[in-house]
Image (cartoon, rainbow, N blue to C red; front, side):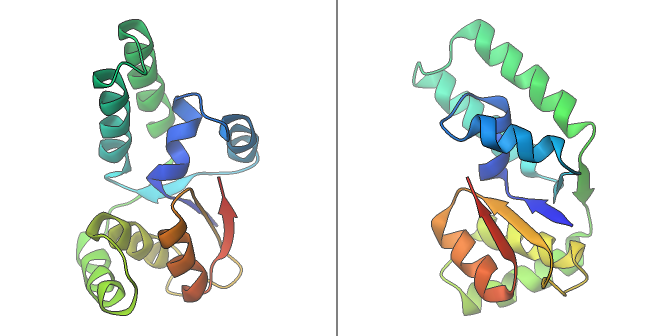
Length: 140
């Protein structure tokens, strides 16, 4: 199983330095992510639009591509188990709430057995926590 944090999904939609490598990785297998990753990605798109980094037409294209990709990825939707694990992760790792939820969703997806599973992300602090939890890391 390859779990994708929202930070690694953004470059699939908006051009970044890591976009080509991550697009190739996405073609190589299924994407598993938290059910609210699309909200985080939408936030990144809208922030770029407000800052002028993404023009109006490109913004619409990015949101359409997000909807297309979100339509085929596998979402972790088990809120109660994710919440429980996220609270534990906050006590153990220096994470923001949304990052703890992402890592908790990855743990739920892996049946709490992260060894042998991959965690794809662009956030160093989250990657460190995922590695300490036992995931094999792919950094974007």
